[in-house]
Image 1: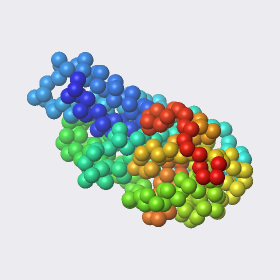
Image 2: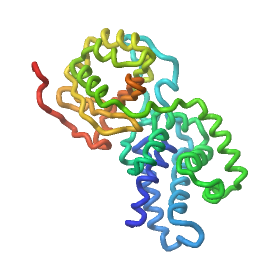
Image 3: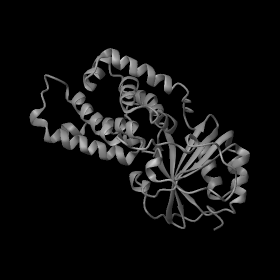
Image 4: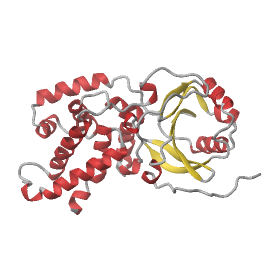
Length: 308
């Protein structure tokens, strides 16, 4: 079983890109490893390397899970930007959303590989993958992310090299408009953002945003675009998040993440996307099930802020 476990992180990254949910990815990997363990006596190393065999099992598990499933999305994929105001609309079920995942569970530790693969777990990229049929999705991930050869993918999917190349071409065309990430994050920018957030300093917070920044809050489809619209929404909201504390949660989908606590209780997971010297997007996941996934405590007292 130890030899199988060595492939867990890579399998989790693959299943996450296929399924768009960290919870489902972990379920898929667990099922993959259990099936592999039970079938080890039938595994023939002369026919395929262990890694290829595991990915074949994982692909079949993911395809089965995707049958009849609703496509996961981000708020901006579901409709136009909203307007500042109290009406957020009805919440959508959890399976409607592309959910975040900690980088440490899916990305390699090698810095050279990390820089490349980080782009392929960004929320926009994973959301775009959900537009592809499962087979095209698998082909693109295996070829363009994991760098398998067309022959290797054809063998895994039990198809021809020509069909793999055709599927890859169609998948690349669908994903051609996905924007690239913003590169390295300025830690001082994050420190200023956290400070302004915790003090509910609207002016200071908005000053750190790009002019066309976006803000969304799953499970609500409501979202905003533009620094001024976000400023209006925050001022009109009468500081419902005043007194919040942000606890670093590492990185999620290549971006800084924070656990947001209100009154010491978990409230939301905040993912902050940065481009250059400004914040380009914030996604506030109002789903406290994410806290254990990111190693966050289910309560946080913390030291008082100066002046409290």
